[in-house]
Image 1: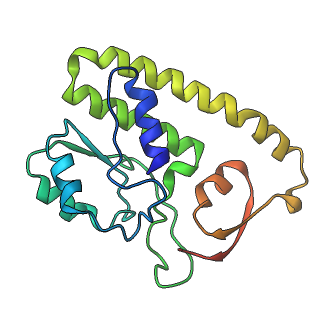
Image 2: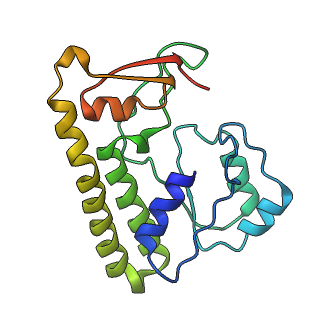
Length: 181
């Protein structure tokens, strides 16, 4: 959630508080929200969540919040399926890891913020465009360096299959120890 919270901070800009429900370092997949989490979020202006079953507990959490507006940031993403393990065939929920998908997340954040705060919609749109340009500038040199490698040497090796979108976007073969941690 830290990455998503950082995206939201970049789009929202100064003067907008972005607070993560989960604590730093918490395992998001099986997080158990506390009553204090529900109380703290009950007066939120907007709740952003990933979707794609990343936060299996989140739909119940939203139900407990009542009428707090929310937005699913993975809306519009074409998911990659998990291959192997008990989640075989389910969508890989780590969609923000790919640059093209990160742009969709940023647009979804800007749209959600504009819905609850239309007076600042132009600011959110400008911040979103600036942040997407920053992301592209950061990943551009990496894409160039990877493209210079022979295709059979382009590998991303990790412990979990959470980087499938990144591997796809960078033209990398992917190898991991387990599909889902």
